[in-house]
Image (cartoon, rainbow, N blue to C red; front, side, top):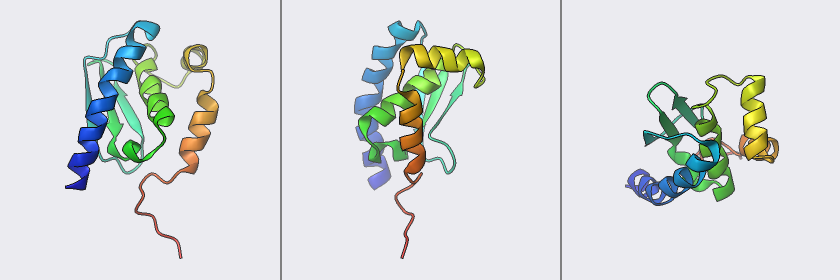
Length: 115
């Protein structure tokens, strides 16, 4: 199944990116999950230390996957999209606004067809 294949590709890449960013952000991701999401690229359960990533990210440029991972990891430090959240994200990932804009211009799924 294609979805399982996409997940296997992400499982090869995601742990490396998490390990890269844990010392920089001084956080620990207890676990991560991959799933199809209709409305979001990722989510974070900051109390449990879990991040969840949309499997559709496999179809996006790798730097955008990294941006989503960093974004969700910053939520381990600041649960809301507050000024503090933006400051931490800006300090560690200065091009986050460009990455977010690029990601938001891309369809959430590749199954959107236009005539």
